[in-house]
Amino acid sequence: MKFRRNRICIALLFLIWIGGMLYFFVSNKDENDKGEISVEERNKHIDNGKLSREKDRIERDINVANIVKDPKFRNNEQIDQRSLAKFDWKGYQLRGALKPGEDKNQRNAYNQEASELLPWDRVVPDVRDPGCRKKSYDKNLPTTTIIICFHNEGRAALLRTVVSALNKSPEHLLKEIILVDDFSDNPLDGEELLALPRVKLIRNNQREGLIRSRVKGADMAVGEVLTFLDSHCECNEMWLEPLLQAIKDNRKIVASPIIDVIGHEDFKYLSSSSDLRGGFGWNLNFKWDFLPPNHLIKHQQDGTAFILSPVIAGGLFSIHKSWFEELGKYDPQMDVWGGENLEISFRTWQCGGEMYIIPCSRVGHVFRDRHPYKFPGGSMNVFQKNTRRAAEVWMDDYKKYYFAAVPSARYSLFGDIRDRLQLRKDLNCKSFKWYLENIYPELKVPDDDVIKYGQIKYKVSEDCLDTMGHIKGEGIGLFPCHGQGGNQDWSWTKSNQIKHESLCLSGISKKSEEIVRMVPCVATDNFQKWKYDEKAAALINLGSNLCLDNYNVGKELMQTECKGHDTQSWKLAFTSTG
Image (cartoon, rainbow, N blue to C red):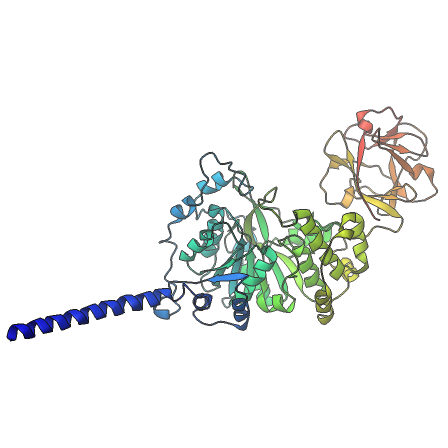
């Protein structure tokens, strides 16, 4: 009897043990399923359950964006247990490294081998102006969210971007780094970086492009300021504080760092000139302009002073989140990237904001000479659509010069712009005429008598016809072509004059080896009229019937007897005005 009771007790204990084990495994499975199955549960990890209305809107759009969880908070408290020290950076890079025999430049349009040989946290040279090292910044600066969008970026370059931002940003100012994976081939490129501190991830379920991806990141951001970086950058010393200080002092400033160059072949970090600012031509292609004389004098007196920039390059800048939203974010109907930097620049200046390059902030950037990925519909079609949208909304009647420079843009399908025109009206924005007169007077508007304009190139070398800074009555020379207009900006008029501002090139007389001079334009003066012989590539003066000649190399240009010499060979790199 006693033996039977013992067997019953043992059986009961065994059943209790089995029940406990089943409960443990079921509970653990349920717990593991949380945050892995539903997008809603994943979203709760992004900022520990504090979802804004903007996050709710993105959450509903599940087909477009999949929000990946932000893991490893301890006991549901906002204590980020992730660390750089624990991250297996070598393993991360190795899993996306070049394969044996693979072209090192093909995948990313830069030398991936050179990139992978660098330390993940390399120290770049501090190239700031000495005055920057003496500057101090407020302790209570606004916080920022760094937003980095990428598509099939090389793992080494992407990792250095994130790590440099973490290492060079004060902890109390950096709320988070939001990575937006624009449907890369390998989802793990971004997901494995969730092991890094403060990193959060959005992965698009289809290709969206930089513009719409940035808006998604901005909508999820909790920082007061949005800081956009490209995915192949490296931040320099105290890069963040100057940007945030500028925005704290003026909420409507768009603040851009000086963008240093990381060589796409050798990945050397090179200091960029601080005497440059953003500009563009009537084709709406971005270019770097040298500072105008009045701005240059100010900058030479104080190398830390803000540089007014008519437009920004667009890849790297900070903007207050509330101002970004008030200003209309990005144009959501622009595709991939291209032209969005000019559009947001026009909008900022015309609608009450300001745009500056902050010299004490420096960030290195890999400048590539081609796109490593395809644009849906082709890169040229995308760029023309985007720039035409910008022209139609912001340039008023001046858009005719854009169409003159890019005739094919007239036929670009650019979509519905009524909401952007309404935004311009609601913000009570200024005219493009105001923008040209007050912000970018250096962009010359072609005169009514001008039929084409551009550069006159010497075919023997890489030099261009240049005023050399000379004035009325003086000669002209050659100088290396720089594409910045200025002294190399020439117009061809309806009267066949070659014009620079208010002066025209004149042969003066019928005398050979006479210096060609700049004189006040007179439409009836035959010595100011020229003909271009395309076959001979010669510029022939109609008054003297002599050719423009670089006869005395290194000296002022002359007119000489037309003999087809190389020194009389020119190319008109002109754009038509209509």
